[in-house]
Image 1 (cartoon, rainbow, N blue to C red):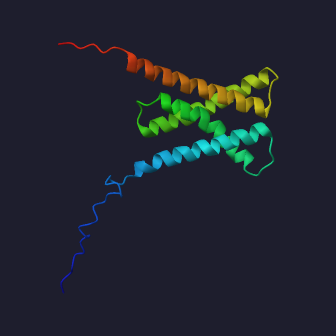
Image 2 (tube, helix red, strand yellow; image 1 turned 60 degrees about the vertical axis):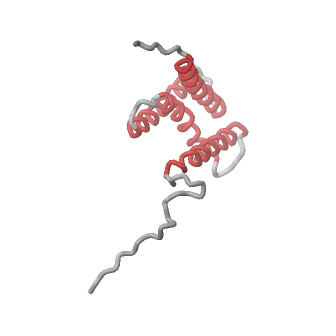
Image 3 (cartoon, rainbow, N blue to C red; image 1 turned 90 degrees about the vertical axis):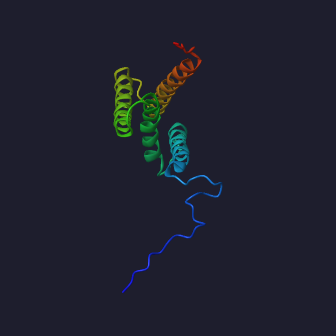
Length: 144
């Protein structure tokens, strides 16, 4: 008995319609946009005090994703798993520090916590962007 190997047709090159190779990395911008949308909805639901069954999970996602994403952007040099572990740990630490300081100052509120996490995450992200801009503008020295 003879086995017949099935070959892919020559027209199947593994490329997309625009002649680019299809990759899993093409889904990353879609996932990032979805994460930003879910986090934004969580922040809006918490700040406007709208009763919804999605309020708690979306707000929790925002409270972890906002500082975690900013910390992950600051740690570009790490390998992916180390970056994930460090950014999640940093996000939990930032949330605990904000909570502890707000409780110690008798200023605790859900809205205040969401605003504080938003400000801290934004500041970390702005510092990362400023550092990248400064590196791009720095003159390079050439040694000949």
